[in-house]
Image 1 (spheres, helix red, strand yellow):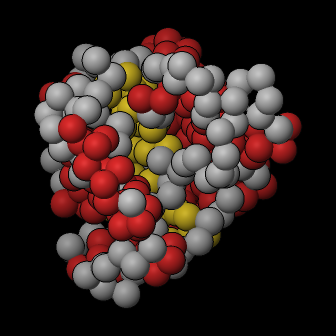
Image 2 (cartoon, helix red, strand yellow):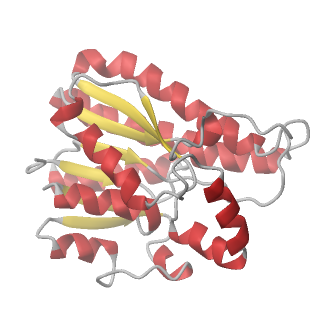
Image 3 (cartoon, rainbow, N blue to C red):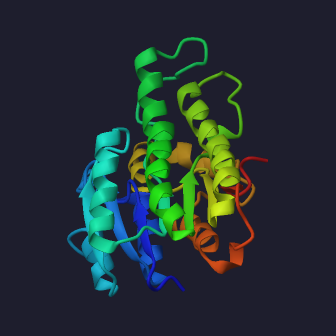
Length: 262
């Protein structure tokens, strides 16, 4: 399906990003692995089938390189895309997966600290924008391309306490940026869509759940499908968005949350 295509997945050394990268490889694409920590799987005890995600992809018969880079820094992003183009000559798919709510605390709307706010918005929104801008250059030249941004159901709903404001604002921004970019790049043959996961059992969430299994069970009981999602659930939606099945779909945000947003 994706033979001859080159995909770049940010934040893909573990978790959901790894699932995205492996799915692209299984569909036939060559895949670039990016992370700020290429050994991130070790931090959360995630078991790989090879030494690295890059090696996992090579074992699937696809070409792969890994690039350690901070997507919040334009110099890092520019360096990363130069290396991709030097190695592969093109970029067909960009998955802006890097992000997360990595600061503890309530982060209420009226009191979230400036430091936390800037950190979370940089990680989740600015990183997405910088990578999308860099990818748009070769994609415009190719007159084709596919960008998939990763938001969250946090960007679509509101906690009545006003908590999680930094993360919610950043992820809401990703959704709006997706629509703006899709409108601009559509005439260039480039599609831009968004995935908004709910509670997904990534290695980080599993590690957190081991400390509070009853809390995870309670979350599952409040989801209409009565279970937490898996990285593969997200990868299934990615497969739709990178395939010809979605050839007339752009500017959309698809929730992958078992109905939790309801």
